[in-house]
Length: 393
Image 1 (cartoon, rainbow, N blue to C red):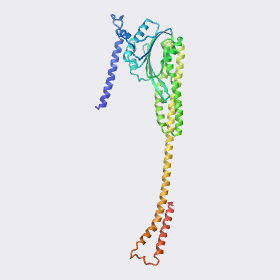
Image 2 (cartoon, one colour; image 1 turned 30 degrees about the vertical axis):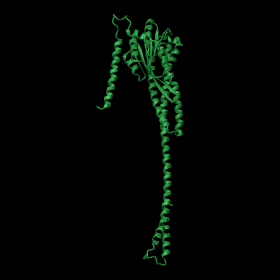
Image 3 (cartoon, rainbow, N blue to C red; image 1 turned 45 degrees about the vertical axis):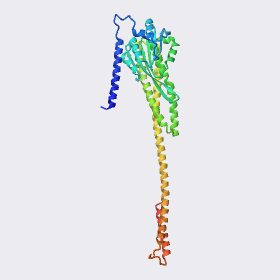
Image 4 (cartoon, rainbow, N blue to C red; image 1 turned 180 degrees about the vertical axis):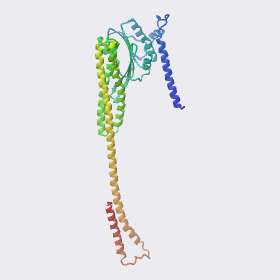
């Protein structure tokens, strides 16, 4: 076994070991308390009440009849106050929480171990799972960054129970403070309970796709201009944007099926009429966004094909220009070579007769000079006619 295989096996074993620890911890926390300790306060809760909560807890708020009644500083206080208000609802927001925080939430709200594992590890596909009375939703949010002209993706995990909503955010997007503020300004909607909060979060995530779609459309328009202007860097930009569109498709396509699944359960779970209209509107928006993203990817594929064709045409034109230049150079070389051969013939004859050897046969001949000159002329004319017939001159 190679060292790489050994390292890979060790990584897989460590991951499986970590999952086993999580499962044991979650199953232990889910065990019902014994009769002797059922009414005693948990030591962990009392300890955490005296210890400041880590920065991963963004905000914990309790609502009653759609109105904020409390903003506990710690998870332990949130648990205690929610028990004291049976008709209340807790909305707990976390950003990249620690294992201990998620385990305490799992123990308090009876969250399924598989959903807690997903929230711990992140990097999940968008999905909707129901565990008893708890819904577990994974969403992929997106935002468009103007400066680098790229799409930044975030991940959001939402636990929705009878009297609680827990959001676990991995990444900068989405900004749920605006969702919380908007819901608090609509107490009639907020008092519909955790489902109303879930639909508001879904709406915020889908609305966050709108500026991304606009930014991508602008990028595609710029790319089309660069393609026909012959920018050599445009191929890289097309490739990078195509990869982002693949990620965008993975974020939006599953949402369509998830929302239709929620709508299919309207009658079974007695969903409020207002929330039904709300969800149908969100489903329409995400369907429209998904279609736009599919169109973007198709457009980028076509642009890449056009760019490849234009690059090929440009290369062919350059090769043709090089071939023409080479042909013209060959023609010039032919002319130079032809005249060099023509001039070489009389030089050869004159050189021979200029040797002035004593016993040269034509040296004392009366017609020697006319013969030599005539021979030079005949050779030159013959060569000229031969090269002319071959189009060298």
